[in-house]
Amino acid sequence: MVSLGVFALAAAAVGGLLISHIRMETSNATQTTAISLAAKEMEGLRALDYNSIPATRTSTTTLGTFTYTVTSTATVNNPASGMTSIATTVSWTDQLAPRSYTINAIYTDVTR
Image (cartoon, rainbow, N blue to C red):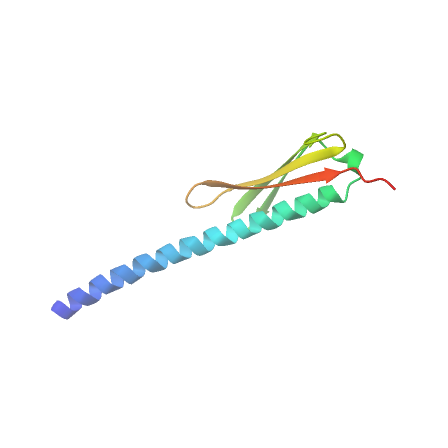
């Protein structure tokens, strides 16, 4: 009877760790996807002509069971004249809470 009790406690502890591991794995996967979407958006903006970069751009992508919203905001002449500061934020909701990931870049007008 004692050994069954010890086994039950050990199984409950391992079960809790397994559930925690699965949640963390899913969270890491969604964050990796968000980072990839943010980088893809930045590369898309980099491919545009400097004067064609929009002030804001938003798109939505559904991958698996998660919906990601990608929003880019460009601020012209920031931090200096001839430069544009761009912030790209990817937002989504995982099983725990709403989450977001932001990357920033500064582009300059290079003409030849």
